[in-house]
Figure 1 (tube, rainbow, N blue to C red):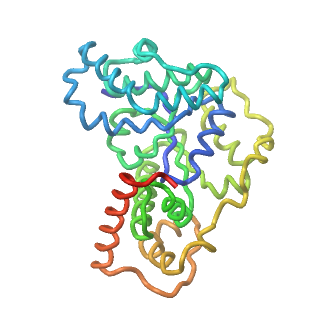
Figure 2: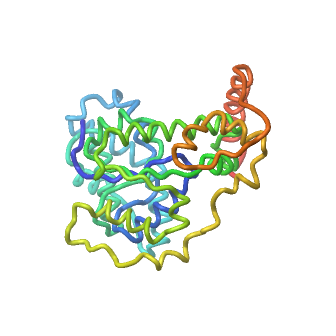
Figure 3: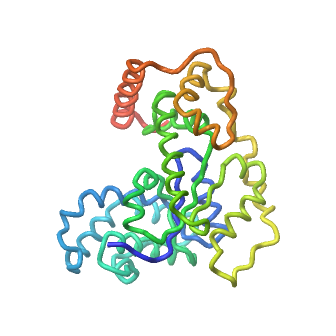
Length: 308
């Protein structure tokens, strides 16, 4: 069920700057990063419906169902406009690129097909949810490489509030962000340096040339023919250098206190400032209330409100 092919995954907590880096890596570093695949956990959970995937008929049925996912519509609509030519992936192309009849084989077939139609050499995808499913990541893609993007969780929390699917209070956002950081550390402890790279979004904003060079060296580490460019200074114009630490001005002190109480250890671990605030963390009943409030509000926003 595992695929030994080289796949580069970009992981991180949502709203950590991964969309910006996804586009940069695709444009500058020859990796077939396109829309976020998102479907791996969904199909892993319902694999039994497809029976024995060693049967080609069952495998084709799986691929045909996956082809109905929004990933392909986004690819065809958005990337066709971006590339100014038709971008589409056929069932035949995926089957031809799949190294085996398995879920991992189908995913690799999709991502290799994406890289092909985008004229990119390296196979990869931004799949943030897989950082919360490390067992599946290791089972399906034992030789994958990981770029882990980290951003101050308080800025992530501010941004998540604006999203239709985002967490609605500081407690839930802190728990969500801390879980991504903890899992990233677990992954880092298991993978050798040539398979795991961390980049802080704030470091990229401050020194995009240096951080882009680190990304390049990681991606092309096994390709002696790909010479590292002398400079990535041409990307500086696209970097919003001030797009960080907005929480200092926009986050209420009460929320800062709650976030730091829940995720202060992880903030300090990555060098983020812990500021003195009035107020303390939440007691067990308050935590229960905030968790329930978050769940109810997210259900409401997903079902009844358009994304802001």
